[in-house]
Length: 312
Length: 309
Image (tube, rainbow over all chains, first blue to last red; front, side, top):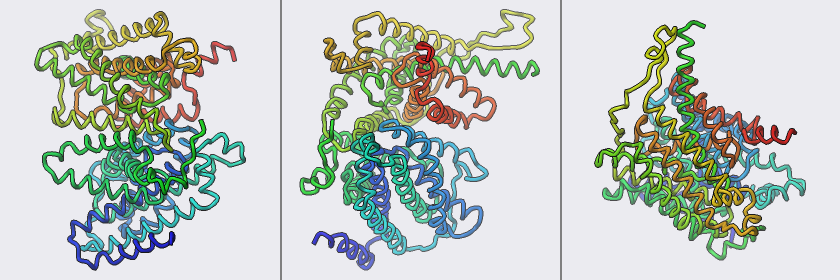
């Protein structure tokens, strides 16, 4: 029985466009699915492998810019960014990994944060290549309606879910958890920690990059402040996972559902709209203090899988 | 090198050193917190922003000079830091969770709240305190009539720098000569051993967080006569503080001072010779170079020298 829920949910979601929801509702659903892709990607690196990244906007932005520059400079469809971004983001993750993975814990977190900022400033200043602050705009959208965008991001999310499930249930997943729990012990048991951390970073980065490509195609406009944003991308990626549940399959999905709906709700109330970062911040603080493992993570039935007593 | 080029270079170096002195003060607060509590305070820049708004309000409504509000904002920030540590960070330190980086994420949340509250209260306009000595400066030709080159020294920059140096000196005195200072250093070195020696480690952590916030608060007041102010300014100063801390060596006060000055000079060189927009990239190039070539920071160089390794 345990195998069926993902399939049932996928089947229900495939039928969703037939219901005839409004364009706005579809937009929200697409955003929820896109954020769960990013959340799941972050979760692989942060939740399972224990390398908390504050710079996932870097991968997101590189993916988005890969497809944007393809369109801008070569004139081909921005969708070609999907395969190309896998190559670009992988190379890029290897560089970031070389620099940042020698650090541990909070220092890794801050090094990745710095990476995100470096890329933002570079994209702002390399005006010949990235158009700088003008941004890149796709003048003709592939589809007017949202249905096909919905199916594409749904397929991407399903693939991400499957890939992460396969990775976590394989030998790799156990290596990742071992690294998270105690890196020195993992190393002494013969796990090549740097190699496996790099693998986690590359997979996580590539998945985030494809979400970035989708964003470019779906939104049709990017600029450095949007795609390399610290608070609006990197921190939200963390919050999606934190709220939903660290190191769980469904955590990022539930987290992104809550976060996107909450963001829309807060923004739609004029009196609260200006204070939405305050409310997010307070939510983050409350979640960290009272539900440190997120909503799914603290459900007792899911506890048994990935919660070990932290060795002191 | 012509005299004009020399003039630009010397002027850039002066600006860099003055900026570096202020950066050192920001970095000191962070390195203290990091050394004692072993956590990174990503709300550091936002605390500075709060102090700058305090100075701004005092100036606009009560006409108090920003340099005097150093003495008002620093204690206020100390109290704010103590409150954050007592009521937010301490509970999280006790919670069991999968990710130990929860505290870092918590400080991000605090920073978001502070920045957003500032936007709500003060709107996101750029503000400054138009002090009447803002444009005052000393020129080399005033003192030395036949000088071949012309250099200038801004009044407010120099005063800020001198106050920063004075505060650093006081801090050094406090950390090396007083009992509380020695307890803080003991806690930073080995909190278990300090506990066994009868140091109240819990209280030292609270005091350190307050002290770190107070220092960055003072830096904020020193920055406001020479800089402008907007609610999102915190983030960039958090990053600066962090770069200084890595460059100087984690938890090392001397390292933070040297790191701050190096960063100041480097930034002002990039701004002059490459372009204003690239200054942040230069900052992070230093950061990455320090991570790759000098992982222990300047403190490791100092230590090596002392022990003759």
